[in-house]
Structure formats: structure tokens, C-alpha cells
Image 1 (tube, rainbow, N blue to C red):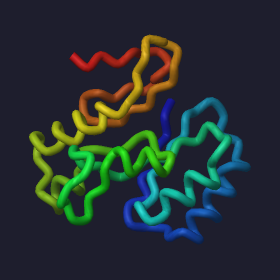
Image 2: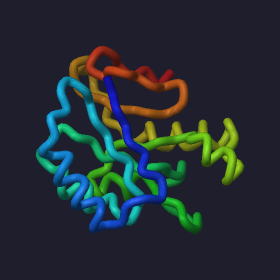
Image 3: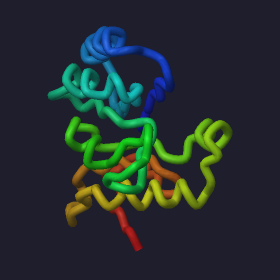
Image 4: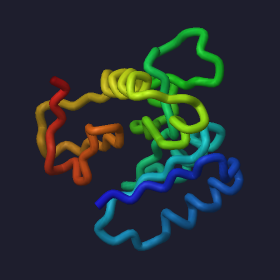
Length: 145
């Protein structure tokens, strides 16, 4: 089971560090846990949760790797931080920022191009995007086509 916490626009760097230190010590049982802090706190979450099984995902990602896209973030920027997953197509993005199925699909395809899927069906893969959601990634392989 995957439990993901989307922090939305809550918790700055100090609160993120405090929360993640407590989360490191928590008994999480047999669930996969992912936190999705705001962009300003991603690096802190990655650092504090290093050497744990707790994932750190972004709250959104752009489909292009670079360009004049004010306020956006790319996969390569996230990977450089140590972030290996993202939320795409959240209802609030659709409601407040006019995301459409078409833009969500572009974000999904853009995000997928950076995933190293490999051939090992046992390799962990966490993708939380649109219809390509797998609850337990260890039991599934990704098929892009």
C-alpha cells in the first residue's frame, strides 16, 4: 500500500525538517510512504529522509526539460535534487490553473521519459500519474506503449 502526503502550500524548510525527522523515527509498518512538500522544501526533505525507504515527490512537473516557463520545474531539476516522482493532474491544478487532460498527458509523458524502467520486474518503480498508477510497484512493470 502506498500512502502519499501532498503538503500543498504548507510547511516551510524548518517545519519540513522537523516533520521529516519525526517521520524517520515513526513505525510505518508495511506501507510505502511518500511526502510531497512544496518546492522550497524539497531539498530539505530529500536530505533528512536520505537512507530511508520514504520517498520524496514533487507536487507538479513541466513536460519540457528547460525553457521560458515561469514558475515551472523540470524533471532534470527534480532529479538533481534527488526527487524521483511527482504528482500530475491534481484536481486543484485543474480547478485553479486550468489543467486539461491534454496538459496532464504532456506532463505524464515528460515525467516518464526520465524514469529508468529497466527490465527487472522486482525493481521499485513509483509512478503516481493519471491512469499509469500502480499501488504496489514491485508487482508491476511499466509499459510505455
